Every structure is written in C-alpha cells, then in structure tokens.
Amino acid sequence: MLQFAIPNKGALSEGAVQLLKSAGYKCSRYSRELIVSDTENGIDFVFLRPRDIATYVGRGIIDLGITGRDLTADSRMEVAEMLPLNFGKSRFCYAVPKDSDLTPDKFNGLRIATSYPEIVRQDMAKRGFETQIVRLDGAVEISVQLGVADAIADVVESGRTLVEAGLKTVGDVVMNSEAIVIGRDETLAAKPEVKKILARLRGVLVARDYVLIEYNVPRNMLDECCKITPGIESPTISPLSNPDWVAVKAMIKSGKINVIMDELQEKGAQGIFVTALNSCRI
Image (cartoon, rainbow, N blue to C red; front, side, top):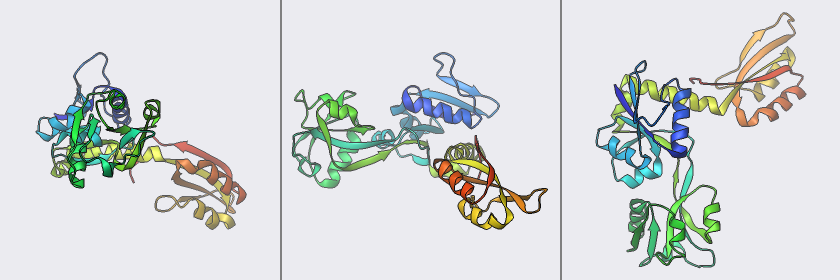
C-alpha cells in the first residue's frame, strides 16, 4: 500500500481532503483515526501534523504528502515538490511596528521572532546578516509589543492580524506559499501508482479553473464565435437539423463566463449554457 500523508487539522487538512475526495479517493475520518485505508486504490492516508509531513516524507517513511511550501522549506528536509495545489496560499513576510522605519536591509544584529527559523536563517545568510532568531510556536505578532523581538517573520494571508497588532509588512515577499504534493525525490513520479494520483489531482485542479460552454450559432457567425471560445485545442462543432446552424462546445476559463456569454449573444448565439466540471484530463 502506498502511504500518503495528509495534514491532520486546519485549512490545509480541509483542502487536502476535499481535493482527494474529488479525485476519487476515500480519505474521510469518522473519528480521530490516524490512518484511513483506501483499499480500492491501494493507499493508506496517514494524518500527521502539517509541520511533520516533510520530515516523514524526506526520511522515506511516507511516500507522498500534502503540506505547505513554507513548512517544507522550514523542515530542512530534501524532498521534491511534485504538484502545486492552488489552495492554502500565503506570503512569508517580515513585519515591524507600523511607525518604524526598519526594513530588512537594516536587520543586521536585530532580534527576529518567527515560527519558521530555517527560512529566516537562510534569508539572513543570503544578506550576510547575523541576527538573533527567536523561535516561537504561535502568536508571533505580539512578540514585538512584549519586547521579545525587534521584528517578526510570519505567513500572511489577509494581513488583518498584523494590522490589529500594530504591525506592517516590509521588504519583498520572502516566499509565496501554497499547498503542495511532496515526494521523497522526483523519480517517484515515474511509478505507475504515483502517476495515477498526480493525474487525478491535476484533473480536479483543471476542472476547478474551467467550465464547459455550449451554444447554437448561425453557421455564418461560426468563425467569429470560435474566436471567442477557441477551447483547449479547438471547439467541438456539430451539425443541427437546420443546415444554417451548428452546435458548439468548448472549455473556457470559469472566471470569464459572463463576459463570454455576453459576447456570444451579441454574435447571434442562442441556447447558451454552462456546465461545471468535476474532473478533466487535458
């Protein structure tokens, strides 16, 4: 059985379970089970702390796992990023008091509080700085106010927590993070069972970005409409009982549905409708 690690709590866990279920895997927990076996697909899903997943994968104990890119980088483990998953997105940034003129190029010799000491250590080393890294397990944003640190480094989503703590982000984003699939090394992707998993997950991710649009259009306006809905390679065109009309199917980006429908209607298209996709392979 292939072993696949899933975060045991939080937004990463919810996103991972939803994605895997959409890809046809049985990984829901009914209590607090640590392992859920999907015998039909030959996978044991192991629920672990998000921060520990890269360690288990890097040491070869677990084959694959879903965790954050930031957590993976901070683990110091050598693992391969196999697939970005487009959820759990955040930025890893430095922050200082809102009335401070401190910027990262002035951090040499200062105290930086963080839950991600390895990311900070590497970034400060690139700058040639020596700093005191204060490792905290949470509530990093309060450390400056309590006099524990001069600046902080933390993951930022909306930034509201920083504002409430009287802080502001400074400098460039150190890292853009999101949920990712990791493996021991890149050669693992060649295994048939791993290729199948990655293909299924990609299929769900693509389906989240696209919808299928269908419409009827006068034949003399077909070329104009195909420019609006070119599809992935080309649209599917089918004849209708009326020889002057054709039916068209094409995949389009889900974020442009209404704009495209407006343009098609202006070209004389009728019977326009959109269907959501659960999964697709392109």
